[in-house]
Length: 177
Image 1 (spheres, one colour):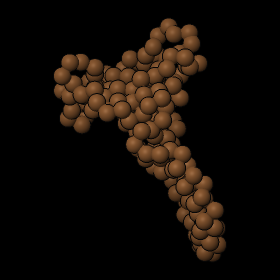
Image 2 (cartoon, rainbow, N blue to C red; image 1 turned 180 degrees about the vertical axis):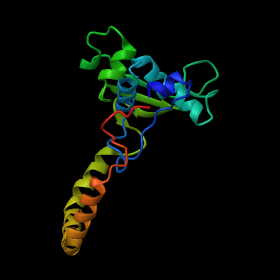
Image 3 (cartoon, helix red, strand yellow; image 1 turned 60 degrees about the vertical axis):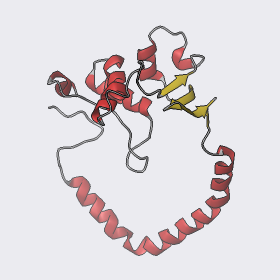
Image 4 (cartoon, rainbow, N blue to C red; image 1 turned 120 degrees about the vertical axis):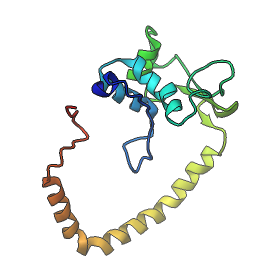
């Protein structure tokens, strides 16, 4: 990351779906960027805001709070352990905020999160549906496991062989550029 930044590469941050990565959490993405680059919170915050807007061709409309730009903003409570005591808001946001202090989110002038609750759907009904559907899902998963059991030794062997190959990539280790 440091080499990219030193070379002047414009960097943007984003998240992928949780089945492809570990989380859909921009706060985690900013922290990882800051740790990999060693440049601190300011560059991570800039990559997550203006850098991301520029990457999708909307740098003139999004990415910073200014007159004439779209009103996309997340409002956080400073009454959270991540910000107590408040001494460097950007550093604390990047290195310690896990997302729990988000109180309101406004996108294009619409309030999408109000006091920590999503406004576009009934969260209580969604959680009730998940709990209602879980027993059937677990039965289906067990049936799939049983059906696939005879194939598992092939999958495990393929996994073992794949892990034995050195392809020069380790997602948990910083590579030299």
